[in-house]
Image 1 (tube, rainbow, N blue to C red):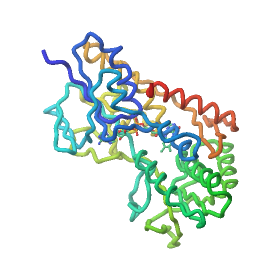
Image 2 (spheres, rainbow, N blue to C red; image 1 turned 90 degrees about the vertical axis):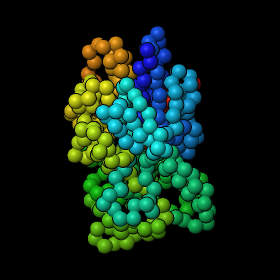
Image 3 (cartoon, rainbow, N blue to C red; image 1 turned 120 degrees about the vertical axis):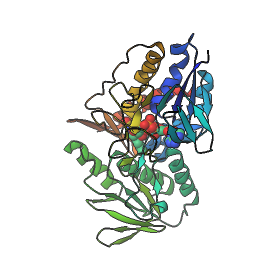
Length: 370
Ligand SMILES: Cc1cc2nc3c(=O)[nH]c(=O)nc-3n(C[C@H](O)[C@H](O)[C@H](O)COP(=O)(O)OP(=O)(O)OC[C@H]3O[C@@H](n4cnc5c(N)ncnc54)[C@H](O)[C@@H]3O)c2cc1C
């Protein structure tokens, strides 16, 4: 009898945990697992601001997928998923290759929205994260030490605030106090959904870093050297970073998957795609019955549940539900080695919060970098 073939598409935060548990959970069973991810390195987003700020090396936030797979008896395939043929239990890759499966799971994340902004190709998007890190390093290398630059961050959520502060910190520590121009443009307010103390503290940090905040302002177009606002104003910008709200990384229409209005894959509480018995979706790409924020913390917590449910499906046992927490703790780094904790009405900040975040992040990475 052929082994049962489990295909994991995307080396996201949930799938790396499934890979890590593969041998311990499936030993003795005729099951083979393959992980498909176009790049050999997966990026742990929680540490990106720290890398940008210069507190970590780039490799500190990277997970070597071929090495992780080899260590846990999983096959790595450097392909990019293109389409799914549900009836044939087959996925098509961008290379033209096709792969069959008995069980499938998708964990392909999300990317910042670039529409309806015109000329978004002139900006750098924060995801795919490895591309963003490459652009940032290239920008740092070609920075002329004598010439101040203008940097614009579009997006007033956690990623926009953290990265604006991280970039400003890096430039101030490497280039000195020369008058670079920094701005953060938010379509709404800053850190909407967070409590007022958190928002006030973040604004203080942005002010102290010299980052000019434009809130309730729409960017309509981006050019190589600037951007255009809805009121017609044109602003100069040498480096424009998009940290806008999340959208699926590719259109999944035509794949036979049930999709939400935003194009995410609808799943049931057991993480199975609605009305499909052998296809799962997790992380940002999944649209849970009670829609969840697009946050890595949910993907991380779905990993063990997904691993268990794949095993249960192999054994013909009932699947277990994923119980998402209603609120989760957000630790927001502030450029220098300080951070802000936000959960409901909880607020605290300081160097000790950064050390707390550092312990969590480094501890997370140690599980996958050994
Ligand atoms: C700067 C920044 C900081 C953040 N900090 C935090 C934080 O502190 N806490 C938190 O909870 N959330 C944080 N987030 C949000 C977090 O990054 C996402 O919610 C999280 O990465 C989602 O994980 P995922 O498993 O869904 O996908 P990802 O981790 O994004 O992984 C998706 C993977 O799928 C691969 N992929 C994409 N398309 C294909 C394809 N067609 N075929 C095959 N593979 C594909 C990608 O290459 C990638 O490896 C942050 C986001 C940013 C931008």
